[in-house]
Image (tube, rainbow, N blue to C red; front, side):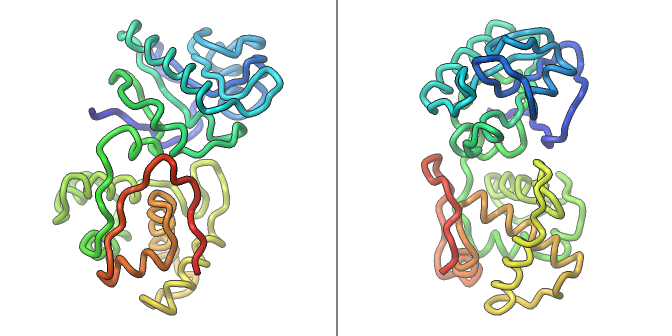
Length: 262
């Protein structure tokens, strides 16, 4: 099933038929992040931590004591939301990366819970690999096709990606990593420059020579970082695949942390 996606930028207005879906706590204390946005711009109500209010829909990810809620309980509230979207098909639902901020969960833990939801939702781009087409095995052919100046240093477009000699699943993966905001900050506003520089340093001595601190090198490093995080792998894994020594299977929800390089 194909869904629509947003780039996870902060929004303060949406069309009247589009509901802002955010992570909340059962106390209804909408003090920060998307919850505050919902309160200030989309009709969320203080003290109401679950369900529809105004132009918003709250999915609890924290309890009434503002503590992280178990994933099994979050799944229950997401299942309720799935029913709501099915029963209100004329609306669209702009889903934020709920549970992945203050609640402390990872995208790969939350996103799969939305599988099978009706098509009238708009997901965060980071949810894409976990709700849509399965990701392909990571191969040398894919890396050599993507990590070229003509791809990395050119604005990612559907036309560019469609012309690449890749399978449909590989093209889907290319869209994800080329459109993931990483450099100089990610979609959550976190500074990622030092991580990118560390990756480039590790690859410079073993794979290719990037011009240190150049804009082009940082763009390459940003896409590599997006790929490493998506597949939960490290620079050594990347080198192994690049050199054709092995292929790497796509991530599974239970794989939670990027491995450290040895």
